[in-house]
Image (cartoon, rainbow, N blue to C red; front, side, top):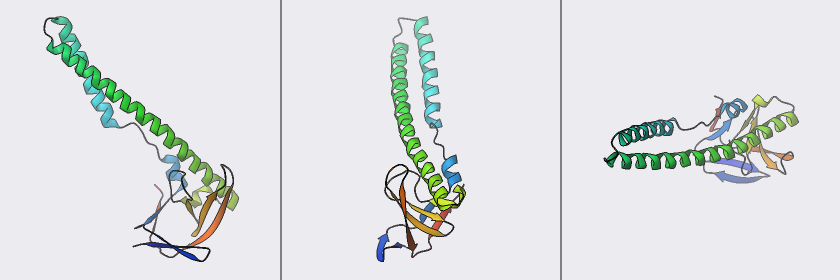
Length: 165
């Protein structure tokens, strides 16, 4: 099923099965944390590193534990760099999510409604998001960080899901 939007009398067709609108509470609670599986693997590799170093220092002529320790050390460095990359991505995503929250708060204040009554169709600030306020739909045209224009639109399809979580 496709959605049809009307902008200034023009029909625009969107390729969506269901348009999702996120509540303010969902955006506030949305928290991306470090992947627990990566932390578990990192812990196992660290334990292997400690074990192999202890075994190597007990018998310095046996090189297999030294090689195992080097492999474990390289794995720890690799996994650490992966976590660093994830942390940088998380910081960038967090900044964009905070921009969405500020926009929702600003729009709610401008429309004289509570922020919990405003639903937005994106979790990251990009493009021209759509908002749903008490059943009325608007396209948000951002001018700068604090200024925006709300353009009323009519959705021709009722295939909309509100995500409140």
